[in-house]
Image (cartoon, rainbow, N blue to C red):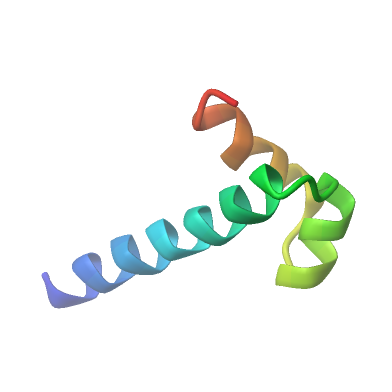
Length: 51
């Protein structure tokens, strides 16, 4: 149970970092490089947020 909660918190924090940078005008490519994520993951997070 604790691991599930931790995983959820990690996912929420990752999403928050992506969206913060997106709202600041960064490109998906730049966000992906900065956060060491795949660009498709960055796009998925942005799309799921409805932005």
